[in-house]
Image (cartoon, rainbow, N blue to C red; front, side, top):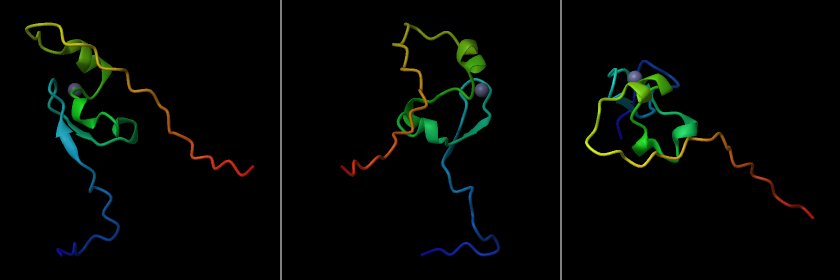
Length: 75
Ligand SMILES: [Zn+2]
């Protein structure tokens, strides 16, 4: 097991990938957890700026912030 030395609490362990438009590194976000594979743009602006693709791809569902509250019904 590789042990990261030097840093304690390495929070940059989250996956990253470049925005297809501006190539900026996007860090994984909780709101993207469900569709991280489909996230291509770092922002709505880049999404609107995307290069013209051949055919219109089906608009991916807008990532809604639904943090799935874990409620244990204790009744
Ligand atoms: Zn971008």
